[in-house]
Image 1: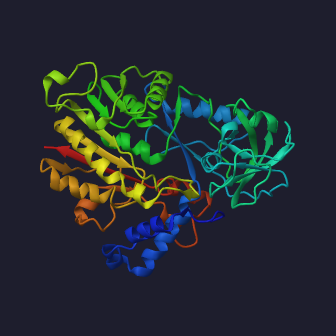
Image 2 (image 1 turned 180 degrees about the vertical axis):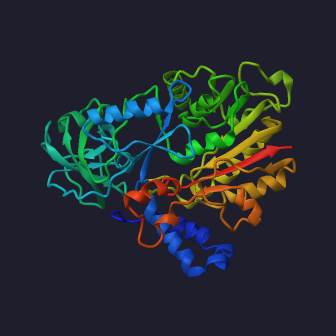
Image 3 (image 1 turned 90 degrees about the vertical axis):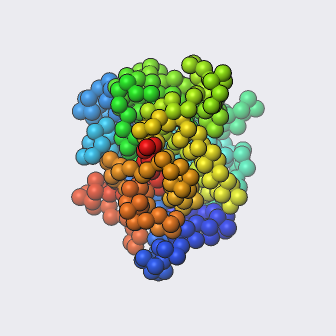
Length: 458
């Protein structure tokens, strides 16, 4: 059910995306009307949260059944008892249904939060102090307030009211005074509004079973299984922060072998190290490095202790590439320009070229993005197959998504070897069915938008 407006974006970005979903190949296959319906469904679903919260269990430390039991006990203590389900095809995944949209009435006292904070609230988070832009003039601890998201990013921080475009997210209780939020020392870091009546209800996992669970989108978990890491291998994660996929790879290896994690932003790399320590994974070696420069054909430039590495140094490589992020959900406002959207393809190709050089013969390379454009997904596959004759597309397991989209010149057989997670396909028409028997069926379909390709170097 659509309760929020469609994802808003710059008009030229919208037209660019429309051209992707109404390209000639797609129109020939399904017809222009159907292509338009699917595109409109895409914009609607992206502004809403997925139907399920996905949690990856640390199965290198605990059995899935033990983690499931402990999570159920924790939720019972919170007086929230959503059913915790295992995933029938992913042996390390727990699923919790997201209940919503619920019938919640807005109040007169309004707190305005930034778009990013609003997206987190829709996924089950409370409102943390840095995310608040505006509160009532005399807001005090214990006051019941309504929380709204500034979807056009026009609210001035510290405002006492806001008349611009906003979207209601639910009600909560203030845990700090206004003066603490907007003090001269800057915003604090703790919870400012504890959500008691969210429009979409999902438990908060802040500080919950931190060594046993990792909050991760379902397609991101699929990536680790598609890569297929084995104990004792040497594996590279090229764009690794914040470490969800890195730690998953290490867990699938049973913490035996080496996972090299590269991240060019030091603060993000340090967060990755913290996550690895929290999950008790000491096979991860993290380095602050721009992965474009992670390979060298000059032996004198290479070191055994870190990048750059000699060519053909890794058994498997994951390139979860920087991308335009147009598949992320929920997202009500996308602020990037068309120039920014189109800037990722050249960078992805530079990273891909490095990945191929670093991969051993007979090794596996997995390329993934969390976006929905052809240029960053299927077109990259077509380019890679033309550019690197030694690469072949390989079947993926498990297969939970749809095949690749038409429009990039790939054959039907080639597209069947790709996985594209397309939540718009279950949203087209009247929207997502919410009957209990349909929920688990839709767990694989109502996800973020995502893309996966698997190659082998012959």
